[in-house]
Each structure stands twice: as C-alpha cells, then as structure tokens.
Length: 177
Image (cartoon, rainbow, N blue to C red):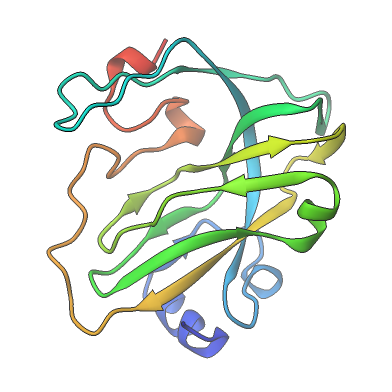
C-alpha cells in the first residue's frame, strides 16, 4: 500500500489523482479523499453477460442540487467525483468509505480500479437513513497498491470516462439517456 510520501510523489508527476480541490487536505496517510460532484439515480434494467455483447447499463438520472447540497433519502445512488483518476500500469486502487460517511449511514461500493485506468468516475452508495451531502463533501478514500510488475493496462470501455461531464459510463450510448 502506498504511503502519503509515495502518493505525493506520484501526484507531483500527474498520476494517481488529478483535479483535487485541495491536495493538502485530501492526501491522507495512506490514501486520497475523494469528493462529491454530482449525485445520480439509475433507471431501467441492467444486463450483464460473459462477452459484454449484451451488456446494457441503466440510465443515469441526475438529482438536482438544492443550493449547495443534496438531501438523500434511503436508497441507491451513484455519486460522481470531482477528481480524475490516472493509474500507472503498476498501481491498482480501491475506494473505501470515510468513517464519517459510514456513521451517517452511507455504505460505498466500488470495483477494483485496474492499473492503466484513466477517467473521472463514481462510487456506488447505499444510503440507509436520510442524509444531507454538501457539494465537495469528502465521502470516500482511494487507497493504492503497488504491483510487483507492470501489467498490460486497462483497456475497457470505461477508460477515459467522465461522469462529471457526460453523466454516463464509458462509451455506452444506451446509458446516455
């Protein structure tokens, strides 16, 4: 796992996380705090298969911000982050919830962030009780793992995605809405 010293070195080279609001406040001892930019619900059926030929992603529907915050009721949301992730081919990452988010009833889920991934994505949040989230709230912490060797690098459809800008996953036009 990378330490804050390692993280700062990578960030100074334009790697790991860009577009932070305040790196001094977001870089922690062993990770980087990620912040809320937009909140979405999902509509429609998702479809998954082995080859991804039949894959269909739900439509993202943005929840308008109420001034400077969102009042979320219990339910499932996708929260896009302000930050852009740029992982070199020898670093993988995970997002874990900040303890304050857990105490407020927000459970976050993400998949493994593969080496070579680049983009601005989201974390999946299950909200168990009403909660107010302010724009730019620090909700999750990304932690980084150095691999023994470089990999071929992520080349899937989500590379280069930007949920903050396009409100959809990867290049899937069906999910665009």
